[in-house]
Length: 102
Image (cartoon, rainbow, N blue to C red; front, side):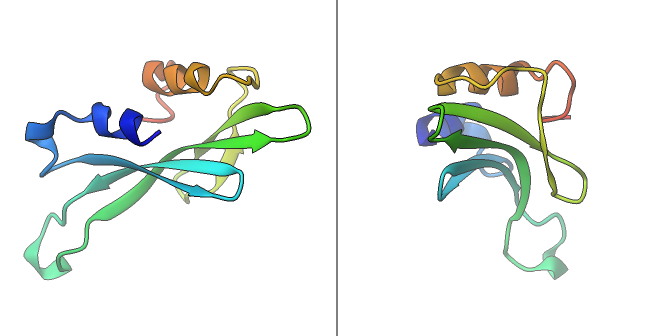
């Protein structure tokens, strides 16, 4: 997952955009990170959730979730649960509905 995130943004552009992930329990969340756009905002980068992958040990499948504008998670039903994480990452990359990357 970390390699996936690192490869999303070319090295020469990482001073203005980053993609990062964080694991918690049985889920992995992908975030878009941006630097502060105004000096008065301080040095902290913003962190916007993009997608969440949740593992269900009962069926050994991953499920994909998308964040709404309030950062609440909703099941993304345009793809089936799968044991292959790569399939869901491809769906995030393809983003046929514009829900992940806008």
